[in-house]
Length: 295
Image 1 (cartoon, rainbow, N blue to C red):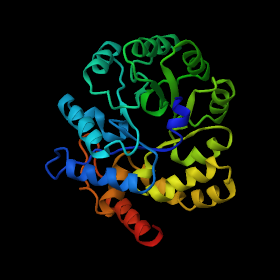
Image 2 (cartoon, helix red, strand yellow):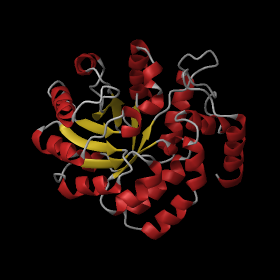
Image 3 (cartoon, rainbow, N blue to C red):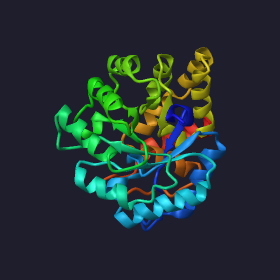
């Protein structure tokens, strides 16, 4: 079955909660998982950038993946994030991570190295050859420093069998439209930008992998379902009501913003790992008031 059928709607890039001592807080992670599934999201992403993977060690990552499978218990599909700028190391990860229960692998494009488009193509081709799981490209040039051009995305979609879709987090709408125009029929295209998700769905996106849905899964996943059904009047109306929240989520840092929301909701400790720090007191107070007055 095509991933376009399996992964329609809202996926959540899960946070990694920490205890007061900055250890992984599995009890809190379980609360977040139940909260977002009960809120109606369609699938989960573990070990995404929002999960602070750059500051997790290998054993922590393995433990998080296994715990997530156990807690989810097949209620929704789970995607595992395995990305980076060392192709050889990622191939080892694809062989050593527990992927049997994963629906797909989400792989952010190489960061810092700034490879050419040919380098990006060869990187993903090498990864796709080493895993039986479908790979979703993740284009987030604001973090990686290099865009995956629409032509490279379409080339990968057409020439590499195991490349099944893309999380597109570039705000260039023309590039997004080119991908939709030229993609193969079964190629999944989801938004990586909560704010742009509704307009992107209007011209063909299949949904979103969301940060915001950690915090308000019921409201956000309902907006996405309305948009996918073509009810853009109501989807837009509800989407605009969350503009203030989107600002707060990303004003200082992701995932510091979303963790501040989850803390105020009583789900996690407000702890992040350096070099990320919690949001300022002023922003925390705004988040607290937004939850009190509008959620």
